Amino acid sequence: PGPRDAGGLAAPPRAPAGRSPDAAPPRAAVARVREVRTLPHPDYCELEAEAPHVARTAAPGQFVHVRIAEDAGGALLRRPFSIAGCEGDVLRLLFKKVGKLTRRLARLAPGDALDILGPLGRGYDLTVPPADHAVLVAGGYGVAPLLLLARTLRERGLAGRVHFLLGARTADQLLWRDRLAREAWLATRVATDDGSAGRKGTVLGLFEEVRASLTGSIRVYACGPMRMLGALAAGWPDLPLQAAVENQMGCGLGVCVGCVLPVAGATGYDRYVRICCDGPVFDGRLIDWAACPS
Image (cartoon, rainbow, N blue to C red):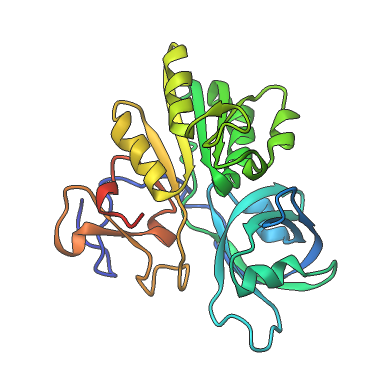
């Protein structure tokens, strides 16, 4: 890593990936809910809100920091959510009901207000040369930023063919499976741990199967659990990997230094990068995945 920045943290050996210097800065704004839908698996929901600034300026892989406006007694801190879609002025979020805030989000009605800060973080690097194949690997609701990325790669001619590999424990946890199937240009395959849909086993086994069938240049883009990302980086070190990390964040702006990851081969203060501002998308070779929490 290079010299420390003003916050005492390591400047990565190169930009981890993502937003160009002239990208629109984040803004805090009130967004109005358009719709909240419960997905076939009842633990998961999709929310659409009118958020013009975010929807018109966000890059694939960026996130927003959210709290419910005027929520007396609600969560003190915002919560991070991957940007799962942008159409016109509409922002889409995909989330699992796991705590107080997400359960409140699931009960919102059209017209309710959300306090949104974004877009935040560095997204997937879209300045890379085109590749013959882009392989997108999603674990669970790591699917959230990858459909937007797939469409962007196609629109910009950054891949001759886009492959979407989706893994989950069971068939009912394969999120957006129907939506992905409607994208005829997208080569979609699924894997489940119990074999209830697609290939039996993990999405990593499916990735190895697909990779072995491809010829030409390959770029890998992933989002999912830390262990999955680490296994991709360790198992296929010869392939360029951009990995979006899922993690809790306190401020979302790099100030609180509460969401750090260890840098491979570094020591002391230079050993860490902040997920919220140096990421959440990183070059897979930058992170010491073995030292990350599972």
